[in-house]
Image 1 (cartoon, one colour):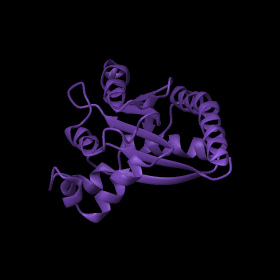
Image 2 (cartoon, rainbow, N blue to C red; image 1 turned 90 degrees about the horizontal axis):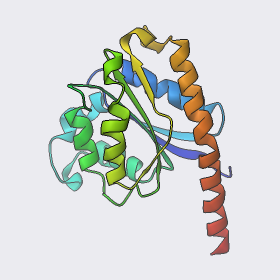
Image 3 (cartoon, rainbow, N blue to C red; image 1 turned 45 degrees about the vertical axis):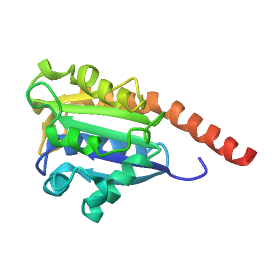
Length: 190
């Protein structure tokens, strides 16, 4: 790749430390072991109170505006949310309500979620994929779901989840490098 991949990672947890933030960190670290990345991290716990101050992104604090811009200009989004009542959090949804609906067309999105038990694992396919389908984003085929028991001291300890993270990144890499090659070729043709 000619330049680092612009990755925006969103952790939808209301608190820090959190298992969701730990999952996002594990995903970004695994990706960074394979290709150069320029990472912009968004912790919902840090911007949540500012996020609800306006429904117009132009009237939000500058930091939140920059976070929204980082989402809208990313080469890759890594997003994860905790499961609350079988869905993503309201603030997570509100953050994406503020994103321009055309900004994510064809942008790859790696999905993740954390929950108290395996019964919430379908959130990736039944909640997150439809949300990003609205944006016409390209949700990557392998998502990562983890439960409370998969973490120790806010680090992924489960070998199964670690293997799933590796598989998700492994399956994403050909698409990411192909997109970069196509983008570079398009720019050179101009």
